[in-house]
Amino acid sequence: MNAAFASEWIKLRRRGMYAALGAIVGLSGLITLLGITHAGGDGRRSFMTLAELAASGGFARIVQHTGDLLKVVALGVFASAFASEFSQGTMRNLLVRQPRRLRLLAGKYLATVTATAGALLAALAFSVPVGILAAGAKNVSTSAWWTGSGLSSLAHTEVNLFLACVGYGTIGVLLAIVFRSPVAAIGAGLAYLLPVEGILSSVINGATRWLPGQLLDALASGGNGDVSYRAAALTLAVYGLIAATITGLLFSRRDVAS
Image 1 (tube, rainbow, N blue to C red):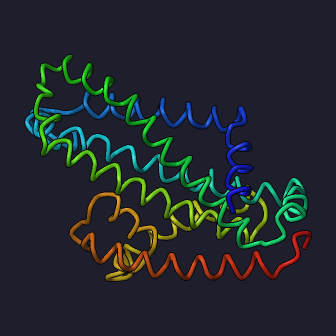
Image 2: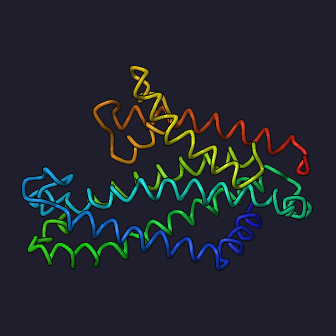
C-alpha cells in the first residue's frame, strides 16, 4: 500500500493538480473577501451582521461558506483521479506492479485524502490574511478571532469541512469505479447531489435525515435544524462502510478492461 500511496502522490504533483490547487486557494480567498465585504449591519442583505463577524466564531462562519465550493471540487478530484486510470488505460499497468487490488485502491484513496487535507490548509492559509484585510477595510475588529474560543471554532470548522470533502470524494471514487469515465462519474455525482437531492428533500418529509448529500452538508455546518451533527456523522459512517464495500467488490472482481 505504501508504494501505491507514493505513486499516487507522483501523479498528484503534476501541473494539472497544481492548477486545481491554485483554483481552490484563489476561489476560497475570493469567497472570504466577498463574505466579509457583504457583511451588513442589519443582516438583511447578508448571512451575518458586522457584530457577528467580529465575534469569536465570525471568521469560522466565513470559512464554512467556502465548503460548498470545496466539496464539489473534492468530488471532481477524487472521481478524476480514479476514473482516469481506466479511461487512459493505465490501470492495467498499475496492477502489474501491485496485483493486490485492494492495497492499490487503499493507497490511491489515502493519497488523495492527504492531498485534500493539504489543499484545505493551503486555502485557509490564504484566506486568513484576506479576511484580516477585508475586515480592517470595514473597521471590524478581528481580535476575537484569535482567542481560544475563536481558534477552537475555526479548528472545528476545518475538520468538519475536511470530513465533508472526504465524503464527497468517497462518492466520487465509487462512481469512478462504476462508470470508469471521469466525465460520467463527475456528471452523475453532481446531478444527484445537487438537483436530485434538492428535489427529494423538498418533496419528501424527513429526507434530509438520510440523503447522503444533505447529511454531508449538515456535517460541514456542525449540524442543523433537521439533523444533529452526531446523527449525521453516524449515518454517514454507515454509508461510508457500504460505499467502501461496494467499491472494493467492484474493483477486485471486475476486469479492468471491461
